Amino acid sequence: MMKKRSLIPQTKVKNPEPKEKDDNWVIWAAWADRITFEEIREKTGKTESDVIKLMRKTLRPGSFRLWRKRVHNTSIKHRKKFKLGRKKLREKIKITDIY
Image 1 (tube, rainbow, N blue to C red):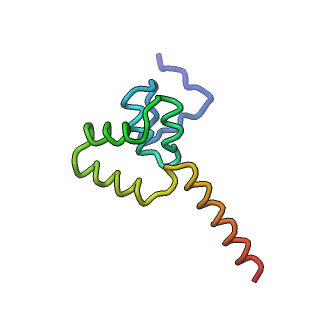
Image 2: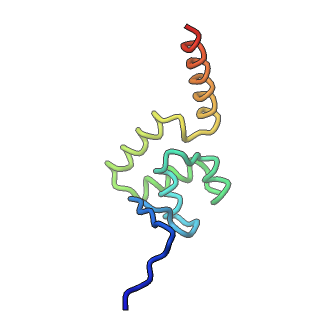
Image 3: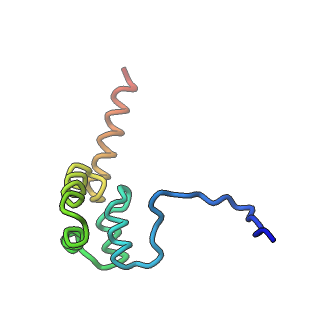
């Protein structure tokens, strides 16, 4: 017999979220652009420096450098910087809409 298919479509993602809030979840969240360091701290208690140490320990050197470059250049990983960037973007859009 064939297994009954569910009516809810299953979305396949490349890197699905790990179930438990362990080191695998922290690594997954650190790579995710929309999860801030503040959110990681709220869920796991790990500070930004703890996350960096964990990433340095578990990733290959090249992957770690790539991640650090990405995090350093991306202001999304910090809530304050993200909100400030959004505010500047909104102001820029308002100015260009006027002309």
